[in-house]
Length: 269
View 1 (cartoon, one colour):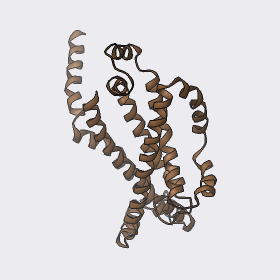
View 2 (cartoon, helix red, strand yellow):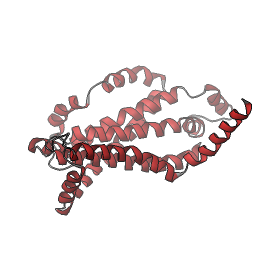
View 3 (cartoon, helix red, strand yellow):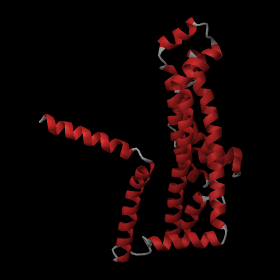
């Protein structure tokens, strides 16, 4: 019994470094998408799914190549990425400011937190008519909607983390004469860095979700607009292509944020 347990633990130790290698993570992450595409191809090639409902993967690729050759695809992608990045940055920065007020101030917690909790429950599409009325259908309304989506994950994570910083750490900092900004920078900020990163990653995902709703606000370009236009014209291949592109772009931006996370955690944690 003891020898078998020892063998199992030894095998686990050997597998752990292997699973942490970059190429293993990439291969593991690609495994499920490859299986999905293979099953998708099988369904369409055997006629189990009609082409007007589920076109072949090759048809989706061909639709993307067609738009790319006409120069439209890259413009759609660039415009959507620009909207997401700006909305994400604006929403996150405002959220950090509100989180600091609510998390560090009892008055902010009492007066601001209930209202922000109520606003968090408002669905994204509920903001659309109001933003159209206030900001018309220009870029401001689209970026504002994405910023609203990015705001709440950052605010919720960081405000909660600041409220629960170990009071013993704070008292220790004060005993060394730290007050105000110096106390926040030296003690409280390092304690909540993991929560800030977690909130930013959730906010980025939420920004991509809100993009589609944002591009319903009178847009004439962008991946969200492409989805809506393809649905009106019955181009299922373009619908699937836009969905795949949104997934890929979301994965890419998340990977960039992971690199930022490693740098920040190395510096602060």
